[in-house]
Amino acid sequence: MKRIAARFILYFILISIGYAYLYPLLYMFTTSFMTVEDLVNPTVSWIPSKMTLENFKKSWNVLEASKTLLNSVYLSAIPSILQTLVTALIAYGLSRFKFPLKRLWLFLILATFLIPTQVTIVTKYMLFSRLGIIGNPLVSFLPALTGQGIRSSIFILLYYNFFNMLPKAFDEAAELDGANSFQIFYRIFLPLSIPAIITTFIFSLVWYWNETLLTGMLLGNEIKTLPIALRDFAAKFALMFPAADGSAANRINEGIRMAATIITILPLLITYLVLQRQFVESLERTGITGE
Amino acid sequence: MKLSKKTRKALAGYLYISPWIIGFVIFTAYPFFYSLYLSFFNLDFTVFGINSTFVGLKHYIYAFRTDASFPIQFWDTIIDIVLSTPLILVFSLIAAILLNNKLKARAFFRLLYFLPVVIISGPVISELVINNAAQIVDPRKYFIYNFFSVLPNTISYPFIYMLNHLVLILWFSGVQIILLLAGLQKINAGIYEAAKIDGANNWIIFWKITLPLIKPFLLVAAIYTIVDLASFANNPVNISITQRMFDIDKPYSYSAALSWIYFFSVMILIGVAFLLLRPREEKI
Image (cartoon, rainbow over all chains, first blue to last red; front, side, top):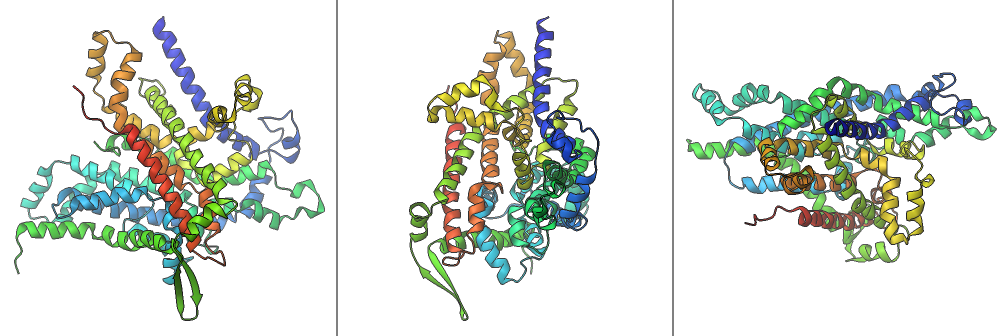
């Protein structure tokens, strides 16, 4: 009896917390399908009286989603692929070779994680503007290529722990067979670290997609990603639909804003639903936490 | 030329980490120290290049003495981090312990709990807050909220803060839940059994076994939380740093000084977290 009660309480709490997580999403979805009449009608709280896609059409245009979506895709896919491969190589070097000052490099890798983005944003801007690549995707590709991408320290550490768990006997055997260290890396280590690779890639993709502080600054107005378009949504909307004539139809409302938010997060949401098993389980197994 | 095996191995090791070293020097160390340098100088852009004049601590003093908005933005952000971090940690620990139970719908709950990690970003959070979607219930309706509102501000502030930011606290907990869950799963089930045989109840087991063993993971989660909150695009300090970058009378330098004030404060917070959760020597 006591056990059943305990179970009941456990599920009750879990479901309540789950509801708190789902609430904003549910709110976004239902609100985004509402017409202006439903939004102002206090008797309509969750279920729209008639569904409308008007909000989505409008916000798709204001977000310039056909362009910004594409920008978001390549500005997150390319750096995260680079980041996934480069951090693996760096971690392989740290895990399998003895060299002077190794502890110092490990310490510096950890230390870079503690530097908040904005400490270097001013001088990064100056550096990139001197190189003449402000507004060019290189501002995000170059750091990723050299292991300085978003939260790359976490990924290096993740691979480092993962590689340390692989028995040394593997590389010794391969070495006897005449493989060089790079062959060992891509023939033996990479195939064995698929969980770590997937975890790194998904997290990297998500963090690059959602990054707005650095990219907003360094890419300027030339290349806009979806989240940045969402940031400027209200201002852009006012430009495209001047509300001077006083008609309610042209005014920005919750429904339109929520539709814009959904357009921004939907690609990630779908990716997550498809890959969620790898996302969560591999992270628990690869030991991101260290020992 | 023939190198010894040891030297060859060391060179190979350096070859693998060389991208990181190069990138570190160009994209991290140089911008980092150059921004410290800038914070003590004024820049003049002339046709001949950039002239820098040493102004000492002028920008730092200006930030707190003359600037009308920065001190407010600064303290808001710091208080935000100080209050949110423990709440996020406590909540993540509770969620991780609950999820560590043998559950029927475990996969489903995890799917749900880690959802915000994927979709959280500055603009999305702003939209949620602007449209009241982040406020699941209006706390002002409840007795407990009104009870705290009557109390002096210094006492009631943390409670009211918590009630107002409930959803945001949940939304920032995803990675921390995963970290702590991984930690809990590394605890040997045998320890729990032994404690149960000795007659310990769940409450004692939590305080005497789970908490000490999970502490290193809590430290990692605390540091992650502080860095995550500090770097979040929405916080007032970040906004003011980027807004002031092109101030006509003090381009770049003032922003650099602000970012260093901020950096120091965040480091102090991380230091406090470390002192509170540091691994202690075994007492026997």
